[in-house]
Amino acid sequence: MPIPLEPEKLSFYSNRLLEISRKKQFTHKRINLFSGLRLLSFGVMVAMVYLFSAGFGMLFLLASVAAFITLIVLIVYHQKYYRMSERLQAMFEINENEIKVLKHQASAFDDGSAFSHQLPFADDLDLFGTHSLFHYLNRCQTKYGKKLLAGALMQSPPDERYIGLMQGAVSEMALQTEFNQDVMVRLKLSLQEKQVKQSDLEDNKPVYLFEAKFYQVASWLMPALVALGLLVGIITGNYVLFTLNSVFSLMLAFGQTKKMLLLGEEIGGRTQALKAYAAVFESFGKLNVEAELLNEMQRKTSYAARQFKQLSVLSERFDRRNNIVLYILANMFLLYDFHLARTYENWKRKYMQEIILWVDTLPYSNC
Image (tube, rainbow, N blue to C red):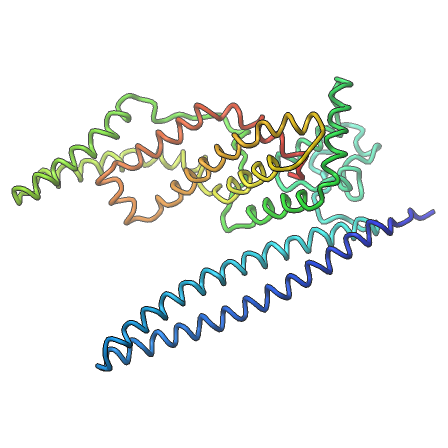
């Protein structure tokens, strides 16, 4: 006997698809409009520069500056609508998948086959694999979320009270469709960024490479000596001291390249994923919830959001080290690598142990 469809849910997701489609069409029109206006403003700018260079007066120079500013504004708006289009497309795919699942078709999410070997009789219970319980429930975007879901299916908590609290939390979050899908979109898009890595820091053992007192002293002493050399050069016209100090500072930074590469491998390339985590925590903290377990989690989220934002900034700074000009100037004058490494290691020392507690709040938000 075939399993009956759920017309109310089908209607709900179908209506969401129609609304998203309308928004996509509007956004697409805006993208085309701003693309055309960008091209037009660029053409006007070039024409005004040419007329000014041909001697037609200062008015055309001012017009070219105005056209340039207009071009920058149009580029910003174009990027804004382009990102909006990406979000709407991801949202469309998520709702389209919900309709497929309601029609008893295979979900686009992971079916959990990788976890089947962890439980000898998982196949008998149909826990993992295509059309399995895991496949039906899974909406996770991260490896950590999938592991938590698989663990919950294989071994439920022994505390009866905690099971009740979890059921209350899940039941309440199941009604937060807008929030849940927004979380999925944020994490999905962040992990689609070019060369992005998932934030799996919770699985890593902390490594500290810049703990020695030498790094703390050098990070402040060398910039001071470089500044002193520059001041002496300005006053006397002799820049030998400045040159020696700045070159020595650069050599110190270059000598720690291997250590910086190790730290960069640990934190670099995770900027978008970490920003997504921070946004999810921030959004979760603003939800109006009643379940005891959700209220307990909300008390952690504001603090967690701030720390993930800070970590995303550090990740971005590690990525910017790939700019050779920035690398040379920053290390010549500031011994930037030492400051960056010590700031990141101080963050790890303070907050690494709390990452698991923070990330544990995400499974209720379709992580």
